[in-house]
Length: 259
Image 1 (spheres, rainbow, N blue to C red):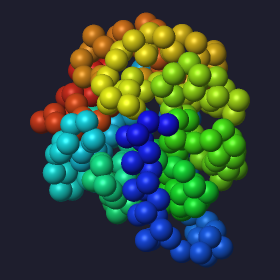
Image 2 (cartoon, helix red, strand yellow):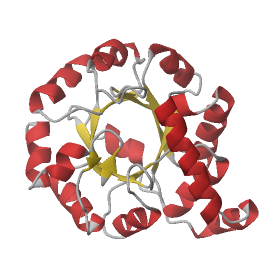
Image 3 (spheres, rainbow, N blue to C red):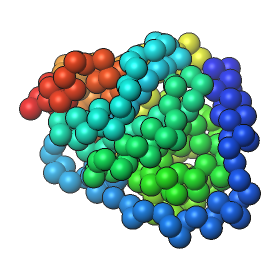
Image 4 (cartoon, rainbow, N blue to C red):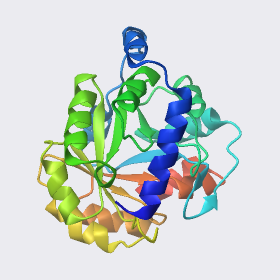
């Protein structure tokens, strides 16, 4: 695990300790959770068209503040109107300036599936994500032991959620495949330096077995870059910074997808 990732996870655990309730009390809320919207279905419909997971993202460790995003739900509605298949909302507070409140606000205003983008390292967060209405859950292989990864993946599926399994190296991809995932994301951002290296896409996307949805994450801002990952076999792209900073996110989505 990189020092950057370790630092982020330490903060996540501290913040979780402040807001957590007893696990039994949390589980009691599952019966009131909203119906799920089918993230995998959203990514597999019209298989000949590349999908976009559009991200509500206030900041990042590598770029700092990206945008104020006073009304996250309004931005998410623009993503939906622009043709996004899934909206991702950051809920990590310290480095990404996200919040659970952002997630709840967005879910109340859009109808397409949502990804909870956070650093999930506890059973509590998996259950919490289902209660919040997450259709898709991010699990970062580099941030978990193998037993944690397998357990959380299975737990998410049992709760009805789909899982975006994020990997950065071939070794992590091998670990990911042990969970029989349906969606794998290749993140081209180096967790140690925070630099983006598109070589990760070229190295890893072709190694993902057929039948698994392949998502290219990080560093995509131009149509030519989308074409490059499409040619490698990507089915979807995850884009945050480019859309947050675009004056017209609907037009930016159309440009990236060549529509």
